[in-house]
Image 1 (cartoon, helix red, strand yellow):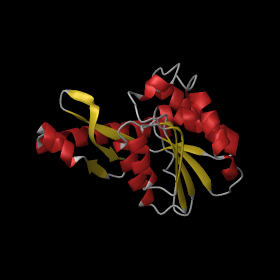
Image 2 (image 1 turned 180 degrees about the horizontal axis):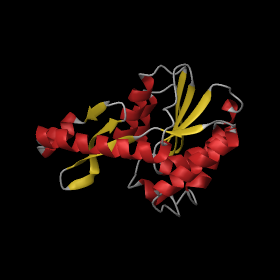
Image 3 (image 1 turned 180 degrees about the vertical axis):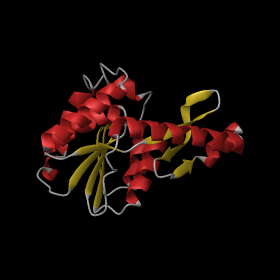
Image 4 (image 1 turned 120 degrees about the horizontal axis):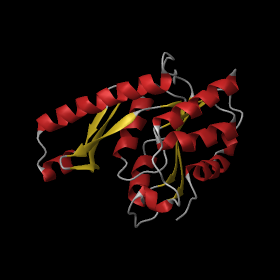
Length: 215
């Protein structure tokens, strides 16, 4: 165990990101659900707004926890073709699962944001946050979708992830902050004392708190 919970992890990351405090064009984007809890602590410490950026994993047939790819809210799709070939995954499955995950993205955007428009990221310093990285597939598709919106700087901040995934992702962003990148890695939750599932209600509450702080 490395972190008590997601809030403690966010506070630790915020200390590493202190140089961004007060930047007028800064925004923190949390990957729901757990990344919003971590990101909220960062946004609060840096005096920045927080929003969500939703990306969904495409799981393997009969093993949904194994990511064969991921899809972002703007339609960006990344597939691990080597893994797909090794598992013999059919194209029809990938297309159907991609559609299903896009529907879930739409549901969550409506649930979390309501009528509020998506934030404009062009020219912004974007700090992208999750509660941890495993294969990195979901994070990678998120990074590439955000880069397509032309931020001035893209920072990835995660408490923990396997060393190989972290080094791959480091090549995709302007700056990467990871507090713990072990070579031997089992699961993100193994590095938390408390790693209960974050609810939609908690995500909405954290985003609402941020809106009230801005008013």
